[in-house]
Each structure stands twice: as structure tokens, then as C-alpha cells.
Image 1: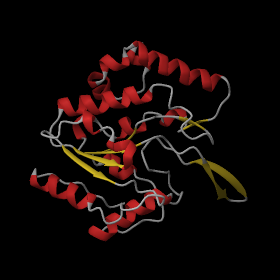
Image 2: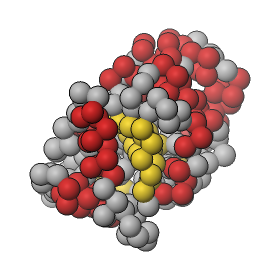
Image 3: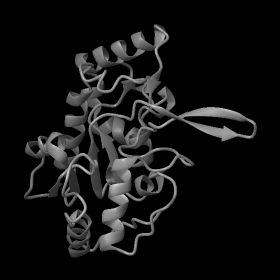
Image 4: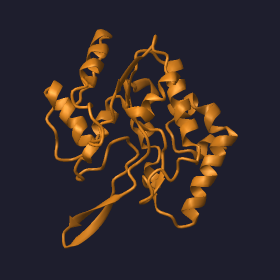
Length: 235
């Protein structure tokens, strides 16, 4: 596949060149575009498919927050006299575009931040500011069909996102990896814990227990400060 046709920053193309030129990535691309040609609605919108990579360059990554797959729904928002459907997925794990309110899992993330820092929870769920400050908000599966959760789990995205983690680990040192829930914890084997910080916690979903009180952000901040770095978590 011609790398010029992939809408990724040059830095990511260089880091992921082998993956992007692989046969399996061609298969992912073909399966994804085949669904678009069938008229299926896919989330995030295609222009935001690689938003996480466009928002955070590899040399800027300080923290990786790993999600599973994108939100598969939309929310009706009033625009004057009409209702407009806004997709929740925006290509950043756990994030929804402003002015949409934070979904339940993100509310718990806000609660944990507010419990342990001076974070003030905003009324929206847009985490773009974190991405611009070095937090790679990476979903393991990059796309989903509207109203069909986990519908793209067989496209092959997990192999690609695993490679993202592996190549980041090999090319950098001192990254904090936030692995929340059983699915994310299964990715720990990809990370060299001698070179990076792995922080696990229960999933922030209200259906799980223990995320609020896990001190995951306290641990992340302590590790970063010890290296002379920091992340501004304000929104």
C-alpha cells in the first residue's frame, strides 16, 4: 500500500512503516472500505479514524490510555429548531466531542482525577486537550458499525494497535501505560516494564468496581515527576 495514501503524520508513518506496508493492513483497509461502499455508517466518522495519531505524535507520547473499541452510538443535540445527531466516537479512547456530556466510564475517570488532584470535571467529554499534551488515547479496535458494538473486532485492528504499542515501547522510554479492565490488562505482555510504567486498574465502567479509589493518576503523576516530566490533566 502506498504510504502517501494513508492519512497519518509522517512520524507515525516512519515508525509504523512495516505495518502499513503489510498484507494484513491491506486486508483491514479493504474490509473497512467495503463496508463504507455498502452504505454502512461507521464510527468514528472516516475523517477521524486516525485522530489519536494525528493528535499525538510518537515523540510526544507521555501516557497511553488504552480503550477497546469506539462508541457505537450517537446523541441528538438541538441546533436551533432542529435536532442534530452527533456521533460519540471521535477516534480518541473514552472521549466524545464537545458539547456531548461525558459517558458513564468517563464520568468515573473524572471522579478519580477530582478525588486525587485539583481537577475540575467539565460538562463535556472532549479529551482532545489531553491528546495535544502527550496522552495517546488509543483504542485497540479503531472502528465500529453504528449501533453494533464490537462489530469490527474481526477486521484485524488489534494486530495493528498491538504493533503501535510494541513499536512505541521499542523506540521510547518512560511512557506510562494505563491498562484499565481485563481486556486492556491482556496487553501488558507487549510492554517492557523495565523501560516503561504499567499501571493497571479495574475498568472505569459503572458495571465494574474499584476504579475510583485506584490511585492510577497518582501513580502516573509520581512516575512522570520522577523523570522530570508531567501531564496537565485539566480540561
